[in-house]
View 1 (cartoon, rainbow, N blue to C red):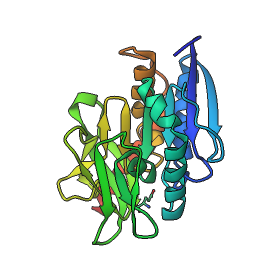
View 2: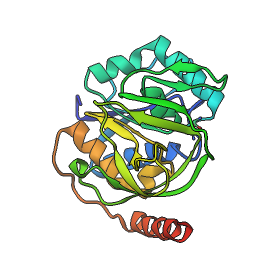
View 3: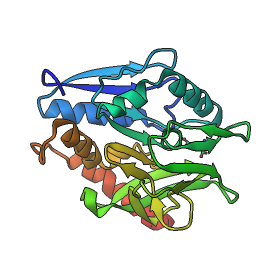
View 4: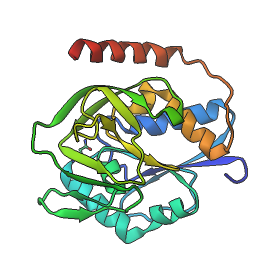
Length: 242
Ligand code: GLN
């Protein structure tokens, strides 16, 4: 971070913003401001270059065709890959997560290259679409309480050796491989299948990204009563649906 200003980049809201994932941007922005940070938020449409000097990049989910278009443009643009080389933090959901990997199956049934920022490969699941509430335990190294989310995807994601599972599901399908893993991460790059938006249900994920960006171990506490009420409601809903 430079000049005490957090540069928050929302990648391709015109293509990748289904299922309320815009909420992640709002939550990170608000929690940064609550800690007195000056936030420069940049919404980068798919006909614009992705800046290479952002601190945190957020990417949402998307339908199959917009997902292919987004992958093509992000590959051609190259800005997101350069940003990660510069140490940027990326948090991507569902279609965005798949795009961060080596490849996924596109809307034409073909293998579409991703950005190779995560050591994962996504294929089209043969079974039923994975839809429903998720409860998951985050990787112990990330040290956060149980996560709640909502998944809706056909893709199944296999992790390679340099990707760590982001979480392990108690309820839900996660990566869909049957091994209980959910999402993946490596250093500052995170991918998950959890919508929700996931940051509204789990605001400590937003704080985790802010701590990484600020290079601090703790942040001043904020009033989390609203988030706690939402979390408890969604946790109960997931338990009832299981
Ligand atoms: N099209 C992808 C899939 O179904 C991602 C869907 C999404 O982003 N919700 O796997």
